Amino acid sequence: MNKTIGFIGSGNMGSAMIGGITSSNLVSPENIIVADLNEKQLDKVKEIYGVNITTDNLKIAKKCDIIVLSIKPHIYPMVIEQIKNDIKEEAIIVVIAAGKDIEDTQAAFGRKVKVVKVMPNTPAMVGEGMSAISPSKEVTKEELEEIISIFESFGKAEVVSRNLMDAVTAVSGSSPAYVYMFIEALADGAVLEGMPRNMAYKFAAQAVLGSAKMVLETGLHPGELKDNVCSPGGTTIEAVATLEEKGFRHAVLAAMEKCADKSREMSK
Image (cartoon, rainbow, N blue to C red; front, side):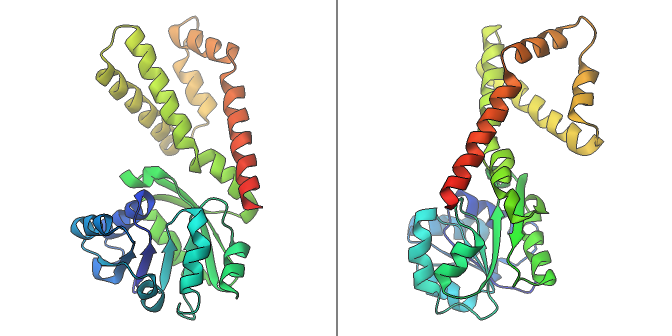
């Protein structure tokens, strides 16, 4: 890609994206600029990835073709106010914060800038992210393909309609937290049965990783994969029956509904 990419913010998600882009050779490190007020964090990013760094957001605005706002939602207004008069005419603004949509971003810039709303998730840090992408109408097909390629450099990406972003927040943006709770519970159960904790985490995490890979790579329905493990009168169906009795599915559905409701509330 023959574009200069700028990151305003170098926290976990920004660093994960930078790592994915550089490791895939999608963009060379010299064409990436990272801005942050935290000079210690900037030095770390430069040392690891070899990118350009600055504490001046205007350098990003003036030089970059794609600008990723990888900052906390409450900082968006201040940063946009700083850079809005200095970005390139055809610059693409990538918004990754929850509660920040295309219309809000364009309103903050005071004009119909090119905006791509993206909902990534933290597994991007290990190259297994899932990102939902929704562009404004000003973004061309070719530009959208470039944005997709960026997010596919550290996982998978899908273009979705804007009305699905709250569902995306619930099913992939926030769901790593639910999965970590499940892994922790599985490990606790193994410890209860006498397994050392470090070993329990390894068994539990690998089981979840392998199960997810089975869904993605076989194309089989999760219910069919579940049935394949449940022998008649066996141990697994006993466990499944107990999960159903205790409201496992209902708890997950209720949690996702609350998550999506909060996402909608934050967008108002």
